[in-house]
Image (cartoon, rainbow over all chains, first blue to last red; front, side, top):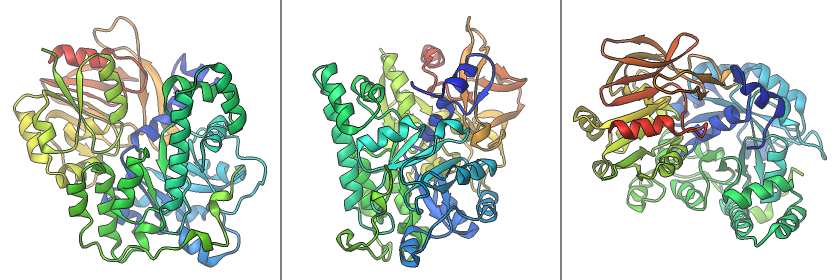
Length: 306
Length: 190
């Protein structure tokens, strides 16, 4: 496993925090679960009551960020702390792409995971955060395998396919997941080292990570899905396409019955291969969030990130 | 005959447990329903969120069948959240959190703090000649050990690996460090 040389060296001796194993370990524990966007402590409790494995504390869900416009930043630390106090499950929070000062503040708050997120307005149009420099683990979005491997090279310990946040439209999430898992399969089937060199060039990805995929056939870190999940069937679809857990943003608290939708999506992620159970839990949920056609969007959040 | 081992796959680190068990050459089934549980000889309850697993056990109709199998003496290995679910008493849990009460210990959830306090360390395990590399993720702590519960390992004085009858529970994640010895011992004890 590639990793942070300094902290991994420390692990050989006594007790070590912030190691690659410890950071990726929490992502391992979130598998098969749902991470829900929440904007208040009340939302956070509804999410925990419904069986969320984690909550993402933010000031507006992505659909409201779209509607509101302007620059979207890290949330108020007071609001994040009020959510941390309200629940016993892990709490994540978002930093702008490249905004390492926001990330330092989130680490000082002792959040459990930091999301360097395209949902907020990017702070740096060239550089992402050096995530190796932190004890807190990072999740980053990706639209394709090259982007995912660049983020892992920078120290991300969990990848989520981006989808198109705040749309309630699953089409982009499907495109991104199929692209990532399809390229993983093609690399695993590569004929020789020379083909791996070419893959690294094409993907603009670190060669050692391409070689690792060739050896293992899987992404080096857990692969979750975000952006557009609005129903239990959407959750089942992305899990069947290879996602190992789901982030749900606007899909819960913009539906007509958030507690019911939240618990239904939790059950759908567990029983994603069982259409009989899915039929039962999809029944009588009320209105899902209103969706948007992605073709008509003026802001495509998924295009943020380099 | 090789035992058929189930890994509770409602949520959490089930894939890593399954990978270690596959290496030990046993048949491994993911368990999400009562029918699937009925078909296995032993069960691994992985780490993850104990509150989520507790709810999913109930909603998936697994709570009673699982309690019956455990009462009937099925071998079980519980790690982290699995340990919490198997403990007699849980501190800092949710009021509605189910407890299977199989192992007479008191466990405090998230005893070490948030993820930035998560750590890895070598620990001495009873019966192993060399240290075991243990990964603790938002780990629970064992605060009381009842009579009849053996403590097989400690970290800084706290019990982190316990055995009671056919149940073995760990506060850490033996499935994450690539060392199959704990799983192998669990299989040997079946």
